Amino acid sequence: MFSGGKDSAFALHRMLLSGFEVPVLLTIRSKDPSSPLFHTPGMEASHLFEGLTSIRTEVVEGPDDPDKEQEVLTKAFRDLKDRYDLDAVCAGALLSDFQRMRFSEAALDAGLICYAPLWRKDGGRYMEELLSFGLDYMLVSCSSAGFLPEHLGKVMDRDLLERLMDVSAKWGSHPAFEGGEAETLVLDGPLFPRALEVKGTVMTEGEHNARFKIEEAVLK
Image 1: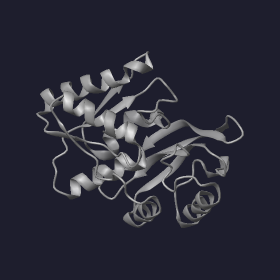
Image 2 (image 1 turned 90 degrees about the vertical axis):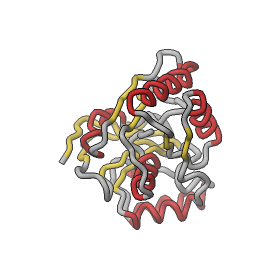
Image 3 (image 1 turned 135 degrees about the vertical axis):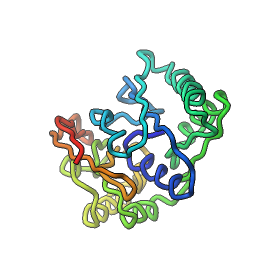
Image 4 (image 1 turned 30 degrees about the horizontal axis):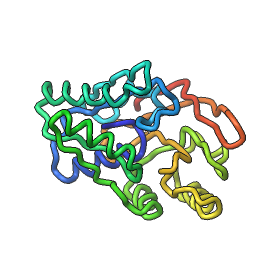
């Protein structure tokens, strides 16, 4: 499962470096911007995920009824299992029991094993690991106290990470944003043959809510 966020991108790297064959990525584009199951910000660039990763990517549109997202996910798993002869799926779930259980249930219903290689990693150490690993990503939305619109659209570096760790310590937010504090978009990774370049505008939507609206995205 590949949402374009930091967690699914890092989980993909973990699987590849562990010797797993990954013939296809699944991206679900939810129509519910507040979907608790699927990552939604940054989907304007989803048509470029295959070029970014060099792995066949199947983009599936979410249902009009948010209550049927689990059904769509299970159907997608079954379809991909048959067409790509899959044994398992991998998800970048880090802390959300809701997501992990829903992903696992959909996989089980489709006759697949569900891997979650990042499950319960320490948030602060995980963010340090991402930085040292060389995964380039940026924040594309925020919805928590302490986060600022100026944080959006910038590639994560040491300075920004330290500022966000201070936000976590002061406001009690999860260091890796697993409380829904922010969402990310990966731009490059050590195993990706190409990189994403995006341009856009920061849209403020409330006292603590803002998103980076992607207006242009290209591979380089």
